[in-house]
Image 1 (cartoon, rainbow over the protein chains, first blue to last red):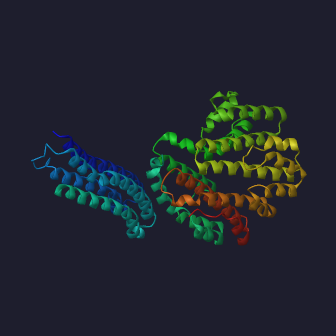
Image 2: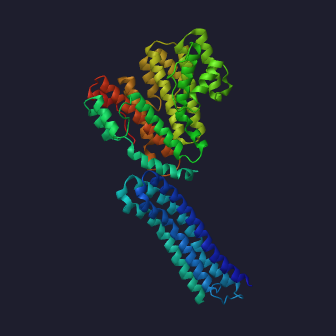
Length: 159
Length: 323
């Protein structure tokens, strides 16, 4: 087993792990606010549930990058390159870095923004549409990081 | 830390919808009679048939504290709100001192929602066994009882307890390490001192009385305030104009009631930013204060209607609302 493959695998594992942790935290804090609003106004359930789920997407992006990386290095589907060079392994690791770093930070901050939006909807139900925009803006950077990681992984594979 | 209160703040946000806003206060002020006011309040969930106004206010107070207890994740977190409840403890201490010095029991003189049960304070004073009282209350409880027994001077006893109460509230605010609560403690203490100084000046009290009555404060020099109170009302105004409470001078010139309204309005303005804060203990503290000012305003309006106070005069006394 080469050190290169280890780093490539580490990149994929961290992409899945850090994004998952970030999303769990984001959805968790938004869930507390959602429960608070629903305690006094159960009719708000569907609206606050959507806002609670927004920080969950980063976990999916991390999973996606982990899948792509694992399939590219052959860990998934068989045919893993056990003799992968250290530099190639590090390139895969570097390709995963945008997701490893950006997704958890954006998930937690999106969770905090969702908390504020849930409070907004709890007070004025008619602001639901607008309240979605604020946490959605945070999503932009999670998507940008995802795109960079996807492009980088396929780029490394094509080398 | 702030994440500990997310659920609680969300609950508060929903409850804020049921706070009485400016329109409701204006409606109450414009109502033809106390009965009309009570009808409006009933629609808002206050009181009910056969409930006296005092019972209604007590019930509203209970509702606030029951709600806060319900939304706080841990029982120990109530401690941070001692700053609001200490006034009730010291009210109960005054009642217990007087009950202990006069034979017999007097039900109904104790208030609710202190940090310690009123029965504990009453028993401590009756048995002269102060060690079960909170630390900040032990010395003053003993001192106040001995003073009343020795001098039979109820006012002296009251100012001793009031000074201890203001000090305890200020220190509880500092101990909470929450900016809003610290500001509340400081404002309560400083404005309490100003009120004491004005009343003492009006009744011609001497410097020794003021030295005993004024509680130390960060934002007002009590030595200067005490001297000013002995010199006269204009000296108090001059003293205030040199402090951060200079905008209270005009209100104090009008009346003490006007000054009290200024104090409440200042607090409401101080807490208003919390309405947009989704995290931390600030919105909870702001809700408690908002409810307190709301109950106070309704009490003023009802008393005004009962006593036939002109609408204009009543409007002057109505406090600003949080929502």
